[in-house]
Length: 245
Image (tube, rainbow, N blue to C red; front, side, top):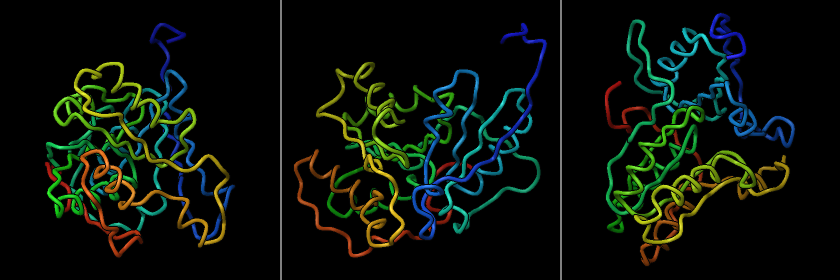
């Protein structure tokens, strides 16, 4: 940009975010909103093994600087990975589950929690659509807006904080560009605005879970919701996702 496209910066910075085993404030942070705030940086956050491979290859081949962010809890998740050199487009979200009643928009590890929430909601007769952003910047506005216009309801699940975070960006997008389609106020589920605790007891109530997403969706549709007995992270393979790999 500064040199009339005559200079290239083909650099990928690969980072870890998210909750660790008692690592507390210093190492459990989710700083993707910091990087996404900077014009010119691309910020990628895959949720599946297949997307991690395809997006990393695309990031390496890109002539722009790319921040490639992985959540710790995703490293224990197994999934389908295509052979050979395969690419996933940077800046393109994926609808991983079709639905008609509410849109659950998520990214990184929270996509898995959104899928769990959609499965819970199906048991009480609510059809939830799950959208995995995959890329924070550039943001796939069209896919998010198409889902919100279809369902009329939005729950955004972010791995970061509420204040000045990605969830605020998604809610602003929906209210600015799809306000006429909204049937109720959108909701965001994020980390509370406090330093991340180290003790497991506090950490377990600090992070949003599938139950929190499902409960928010039920409130939107005026249906009761009974908390699911499991609130621990599950290893959900890529096979739980719909679409090509």
